[in-house]
Amino acid sequence: MITEYHRPQTMDDTLKLLAQPNTLPLGGGTKINSPAFKDRDFAVVDLQALDLKRITRNGYTLEIGATTTLQQLLESADAPAALQQAIRQEASLNIRNAATVAGTLVSADGRSPFAVAMLALDAKLDIRYSTTESRISNIGEFLALRPAGLITLVSIPLNAKFAYEQVARTPADVPLVCAALAQWNSGRTRLALGGYGASPLLAMDGTEAEGLESAARNAFHEAIDQWASAEYRMDVAAVLARRCLASFNAGPQTKNG
Image (cartoon, rainbow, N blue to C red; front, side, top):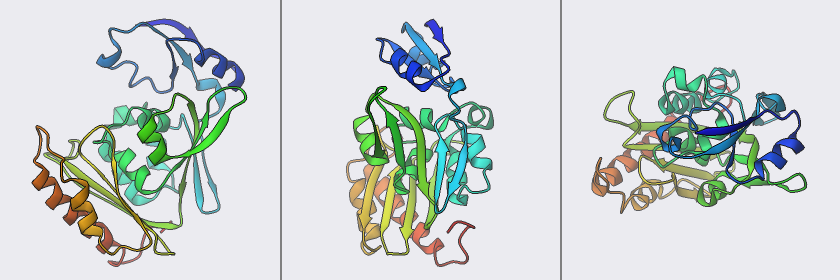
């Protein structure tokens, strides 16, 4: 349960409070209020006063403040259509209106459509570790290491073609398999897969799309759990990857593509 509540007015004060033991940042509150935290005692640091809820287009980069809600990003005129699709699959409208971009990434597992999409887009995260230390991390590094810092900004490219596909038991369910594909004019191609495990999987980051389906299959060769077999996921991942790539040639891309 929450034992202390703080609402600092500056970033320095926020970071000093977060350095204390058993203290967590509070954005939308959707995760802190979940059953996973019911048996824990902790203090919270409300981020509302830090002006981190914004979306700014800077050339071919979309800069997303950490406390921007999923719904605000979905409704942004600059958000790629496939990213909007992934956000819709991430959570219901009520949750999207509260859940923040950073909070969703911090708590994401391998079945998070939003995290899969951000991994394919090679998102960059501005992370503050203390009043004197900060760094920019790529999303893959962040998901692998889960560092204990405060995300302040998430940046994604707008100059890449981008597609998202998934298969789930019902339209509203989290995916059994999902695939997100980004491709730049240089030919660089990134395929991320989800629907299994503790984190999304980066199946390909190459100079071209050759071998895309094989990469999708290989990434899921051990992806067995109570919901699906590895063989099923391997087959579906290859199909979804192929569909994503085919969509790039099916007609005009989104306004950002």
